[in-house]
Length: 372
Image 1 (tube, rainbow, N blue to C red):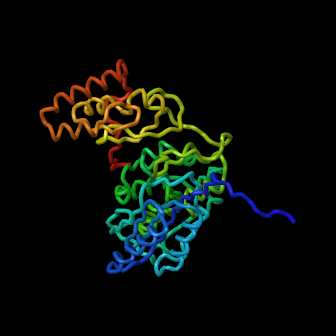
Image 2 (cartoon, rainbow, N blue to C red; image 1 turned 60 degrees about the vertical axis):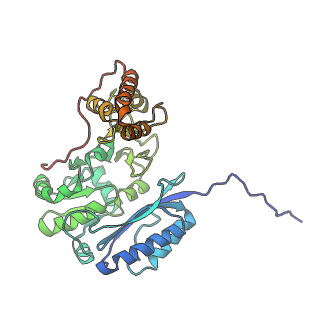
Image 3 (cartoon, rainbow, N blue to C red; image 1 turned 180 degrees about the horizontal axis):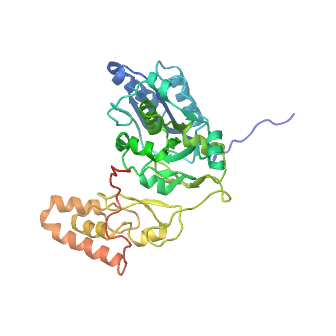
């Protein structure tokens, strides 16, 4: 008789999934806290991690865990009063090598995207306009002159990646968009506008507002950019994908279709790497080669380097021998040590960046742009 006993691998690791979903809903304000607490309790019970936003107009959810935990979450949504019939739950999922977030939280907000104009599901169904990834691909491939493509994300996200032929909206904060709608309308010159953002949350709400006001038609990508990425391996996606977790910059497609388009802020080398300035009040997102970034001690500019030596607001990193948080705490609890600590940090950083010249004198932190 055949022996059917099998030894299961001790090294087998189940596949993690990153799930991002959203849905317009109409939740009574008096029920919002109770529903949000129940949502948080369930997610903690099955060990999901990261962040869910719930408002009277919307749920937006990004979580990670193994397949069956994510499937349990899908069933929970499907059997809930307000969150059933969420589209593209698995179609837009992304395989990842583990949890990308440290904890689980549910945040209750007045508006998901702060326009000071609330959206309801009725208006969404009436005014939303969507194009399938297939149609978006056709528009890009043919460079369809009936459309302009508008990238509605923040400036640093556009610099990291964008769709071919896309025009940057040059916004840093999406609160600017209602003020800029007329500018976009004038730019379109009666053409249709295809606009997109990473998770589509911004664009769908903005589309409702824009299609109420202007004759120009505003379209979002059905299933967001993520569905396009999961559907096509082509040349229409330029560079990496910006992600809101510890990956920051994620390689898209393969070596034959991936395109690197931006230069390192220090060396002008082409690079796919994205980092944050080490000076905490700045925290600018930079396109920077890893080695070059380290050689400048993770500062984006001469301004941040000089300020860091004066206020010690410096992020700790593994390869730097100084513990800046400990030094800051010591300076606060023992004021007599402050001058000694400042001198210690100054000498250390000056030695680290000996003879280094920054390409940028001023902080590269993004500033709000009110005019288009």
